[in-house]
Image 1: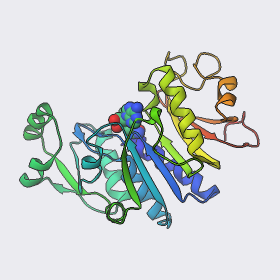
Image 2 (image 1 turned 135 degrees about the horizontal axis):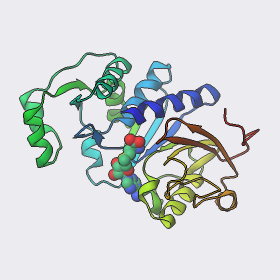
Image 3 (image 1 turned 90 degrees about the horizontal axis):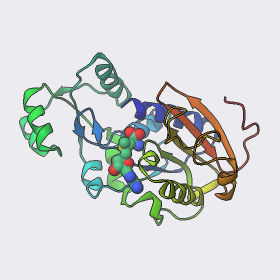
Length: 257
Ligand SMILES: C[S@@+](CC[C@H](N)C(=O)[O-])C[C@H]1O[C@@H](n2cnc3c(N)ncnc32)[C@H](O)[C@@H]1O
């Protein structure tokens, strides 16, 4: 959940600068504590609603063939085991303006989880809340749609169609060629002023993505991909760096904001 709230904070910065009418979340994420579900799109949608920006479309892209089932679940579950997990759950309840409740027996049967986690569920006290109403209604009216696809294969968005892409903790799972192809497809799908939000492993990690001094993708490669100005880099924590990539010029790309 922490990453989802980081993503919402970054989106909030973006909507203050530009009209985000069309966005994509690539790698929608199924894990919330031990349960398989999708929190990033829910929290982004709730944040947009809280900012008074309900007029947007969001495409959810994931390689997992169960994506549409998980995206469509109306209930979210948590098993807060640590104070930090408890605090993120409280954030969720606050952002979506609701209270939690115990999970019902009926819901337990609907949860999409592994045998191992099912066992865990029986042992632990599970909390439940609804997914945000605005998220549910946008799924229903088609403003939020799901595409089962591999980001590296393309075909999941028209060229120049998106204002904003959130793709966090996905590229690091792909081999170098897959990362390059993915970036190319993301770049093509962005409008000229669009933003791409990527995260990275900590500096020095062999999988670091966008680091001239050790990463696989330096300025030259980015230029070849038409990603001309990288970027603002935000070091959120020891493990988490966010890169905001804008397709066209950023006035002073070397100065983190
Ligand atoms: C670690 S989760 C990250 C989810 C979310 N972005 C977040 O920050 O919490 C990785 C997600 O990416 C998806 N994924 C992995 N490889 C992918 C690919 N090649 N194309 C699309 N989605 C992919 C997985 O199915 C999973 O939902």
